[in-house]
Image (cartoon, rainbow, N blue to C red):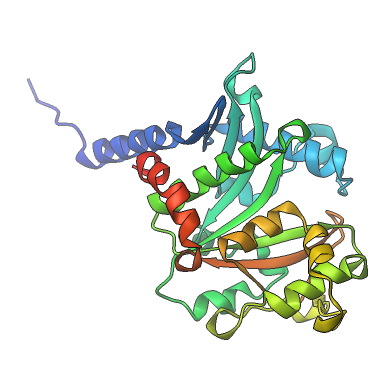
Length: 290
């Protein structure tokens, strides 16, 4: 009888896939009944796309094509190469993929390079920024959304638990991506955008600009005419959250007609994150990142 030996390459690949699936199924953070982890299969990615649709299209009025209107999903070509961070309310009834209440899309540099680029390259000169930092590992964050009834400090904190654990798991050194102001008129956000331009600009090796064809000035008011309190009050919570962590903002904003937003670019080197937040998320990150 001939003994048939297992194919070592196939065995290694199968074990690698199994290990990756096990890694993805582990929680990256937890507060009360809210748990944050990565999507494990197509049903969960589809459920995340449905949550995005409810927020971006039903609530905020983004433009949709016929396929999106039929499927009721926010989807594009980048979904296939991204990791999808999910906030799941474990106290809700039904299958797990129906308990998703928030999501964030994560695109690692190596996956973006293999696929031809990052999502935000259509709006900002991200390729040039990355070229100046060949020793860094970039992560693009995007499509952040949470269902209305879950927009609380607790949900934001569990999302950041997950992001911080993910950053540690994959040795990410720079987080970057677009953040949005609602509406397509930069002048409507003159106070906040001007504050960002005067006080929060990325500079030096970290400078990044909107692509020339889509560039709109942010410094619509002089620095000495700004009211700090009203400028901060006019900023979206996501932008304020990034600034608290130590992020800087690129030069120029971009109008996204499809989503009905004014976009700014956020750059956050991990080494720039305030020590208080490292200490706050650090212990959980080490526990969940393994």
